[in-house]
Length: 228
Image (tube, rainbow, N blue to C red; front, side, top):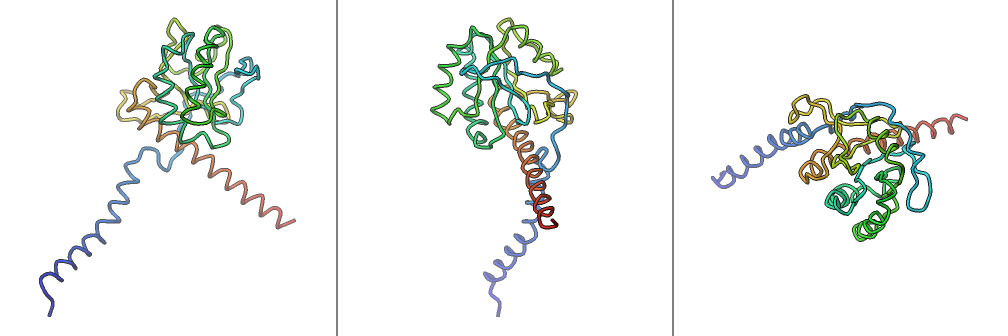
């Protein structure tokens, strides 16, 4: 004879079996951009090869997934931006070999960049975090080529950072319900909520897109080798 306790257990099991698939579906359905590609909002961000890093080497956007930033001639005054990004984005993704942070600065910011590099190294290795230096005119040209609608301040700084894909295209959102026109060109590094939520999610989407592409290319190459 079935006891009331056994009957309750059966109902709980049935409820779990019924609700679990719905919960899983809702989890993935509510995650922004979990399955789609991040839209291209601006094409052909201009070359950054005129900029040189702390070691005097030219930098590039080509074949890199880049977080591009502009932290001005006194980067120590905007170090909160750096720490937010280093802790919430860079630390989790720096090991991906084609991922980089690239912060464009005027020459006057070189000493501040050295100090911040040492600080970032306490969070994660700085092999994929690059400060690069150029003229104020070149910094303004790169920023303008984003067509973001944002502005550099008088020190050539902006709290907004940008996701640039391997083809030098600016990625972002065109249907964000929290923004009036739905367009998100950049992510406010002064806002830990924006970095920890919106930007973190979008970086995952872009990295996942290229990981999938890499796997598919690898499979195609293996098939071609077998056919030869």
